Image (cartoon, rainbow, N blue to C red):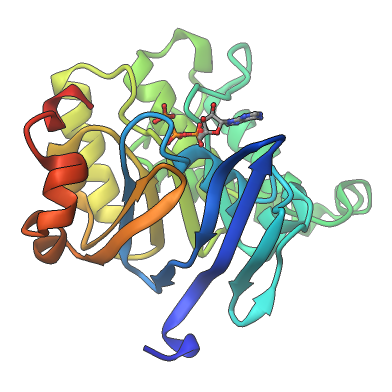
Length: 254
Ligand SMILES: Nc1ncnc2c1ncn2[C@@H]1O[C@H](COP(=O)(O)OP(=O)(O)OP(=O)(O)O)[C@@H](O)[C@H]1O
């Protein structure tokens, strides 16, 4: 597959913490408008990988190509502005602000100069519309004026996704979006993510294998900081190496 087939691609991406190699020469390609899950046991290096992708950690080596340009080492806010949005394992909202305010602040953060922006009434309107669209896209239509902290946990996770959408990303990086959710909330979130996967490139770290199989078309399996295998869902499900290392007998433990 040629480089142009991928909107985002890592080449030999490496991260070393002291003596520990958390990511060892990881090369993964992400296609446009595809849901791609990164799976693997605890400590495999998944969070480190997404922290590198989104500029939250500087790599020790390798490349991160976004639309062909190497963005490795770029600061997180600059990566966001390029169009790679990211949600976190824990909710990251302002609980005393309304849903709309949370999204409006996120939309504003995408702009290079928010002070300059505040002077323009038309830009304010554009950002407000972007915030409302993001709420709708995240399934929170009608929740605009609701104080974020008073919503259910599941809705707060939806709000966090709305805040990422408000930054007008092309690539959405979601770190354990189902963490802490009950069955109903999880099903709702899976539906939302399947819907978003039709319009965005989705990169997902998730332990819930039923959800991963329902959302992702492509899977990359990490073990001990290395990429074990990357490919279409069916290929990974039937891979002997993946079965042995991860999806086999102990898969339910993850
Ligand atoms: N900031 C850090 N400093 C030192 N070691 C770290 C740091 N972050 C992660 N590690 C180590 O790197 C390895 C990979 O951790 P990472 O959190 O990326 O794995 P993971 O696959 O996301 O695990 P989990 O599924 O439990 O979240 C682990 O051994 C971890 O202890």
